[in-house]
Image 1 (cartoon, rainbow, N blue to C red):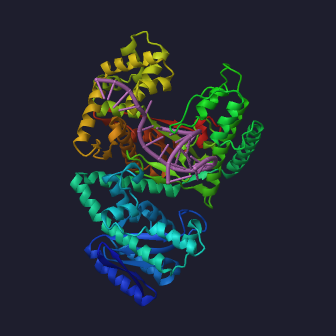
Image 2 (cartoon, chains in turn purple, brown, orange):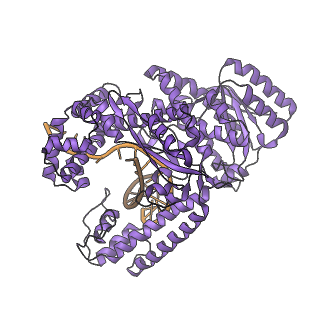
Image 3 (tube, rainbow, N blue to C red):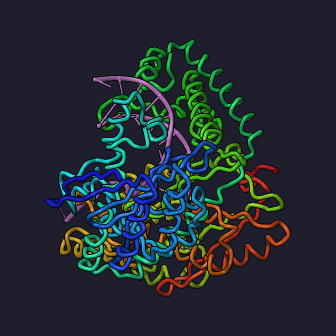
Length: 615
DNA sequence: GCATTCACG
DNA sequence: ACGTACGTGAATGCT
């Protein structure tokens, strides 16, 4: 037995690293007694993040409580594996920090299904996010093991991940190669592997007590664990990548990038990503740049360049001036480069051996509880063009079905702020922006009036003012101000709710408690954002409930991605219409008297087919 | 590490 | 009293 000791919060803790069968027997004895005392913390060390990659390896499985940890060297095989598997079976309750990751690792590399692990798990990262969802940069504690340990357990607790990268460097390894390359018996590696479960063990009860003190209900905690499990199932399933298509696409995009990079070079811009070079060259061509960034530099973003290139935001020719060829070339080069690097190439880098990509779905990432998807960022694929989404396919014999909520944030606002006339309009099935335009401008309202009212509605949901709404809608400032005033007369409850929510937040430590009991911390200098937080988080919880409904209806196997107000599914082609109706039913609710409704769109094999592709 | 930019809802 | 657009992920340049 190798034994390491460390001081945590004034107490000596012990990390045991079994070396032989006799040591493993001691481990099994510990499991049998420890499991009667309460939940056991669980963690894994692996070769990295690429869980579905061909060369990925599970290296160690760690178990522990507040005082001791056992680091089981899975990589050694034999009795090490059977002991770890036995423990994974007999332990009734686990504590895991960022459980979806370890569920998927153990599911794929230890043959322990996430369906068996998830119901036994409390995820300390979820608990932390329900106490305070903010990242350290936003003024929160953060939801990583390191900041939580420092805050709740011991300010001197080591940064086990960060410190190990320093160890990697001292061994001639890098952050990328260290997790796979470090010696399984390296003392720091084993000590830190053990400390992670000890820290998780200590954080869990403190967070549970915090949630109880703050009045966060257990149903919300349970709900989040169910959603995390559903997201992990979606991640495990992944999506089929059309690899031939992506390889071709990558080549074409790179070619387009090169072509326009050369054009830009003719105007003296060596690097199309250097805003300074672009600004200098444009001024040299006699253009005048007026807009500046927050830090005072000349702004040369897409809007500025499109205007110089005589194009609308949809890249249509305006015929209002002679297009500036440099602006045009920079726009095209940057777009092709980004689409290639961020999308096409990332698809090829993350695809597994069976041709699927498995994006990380973080079920509770944003401070409003919104989900996020990374590696690749499938929530942000271009929607103006089918080109990139065309690369992702439904299963063989399936079609893509995308089901969107109808104007969910406006409906949620009507429900939460109890906006009488808005609720009437929605309940009677009217187009909300038509309805508003009629109330504000009378029966003879125009399309421009409707557009303005839509912009004002967005402004209400986002907490924007007249200047921003004018900029976004392109309407004159006077009209915007009149429309806002009229809007406030028609729907006075919104302003009142905003004022009430801000007042209540001031009285409760700058936190708004959402309709589902979620804690939404406000920034002191922009408390107006509470309206958006309330709407965004309620919409997110409506999405989450829909996902639970879908699982209940037996649709989990079809689910692929959650995209804020949409669920993307892969559905057997011959049953698509029926299943689409079933999905819509799962996404239909009554929220405080406001109908939340969804509409499914049935596509073809590729995701791009829902954006105009013919396959 | 911060700033800028751009992709999404 | 007034007015404030919200939330993400990712690549890249510059210091």
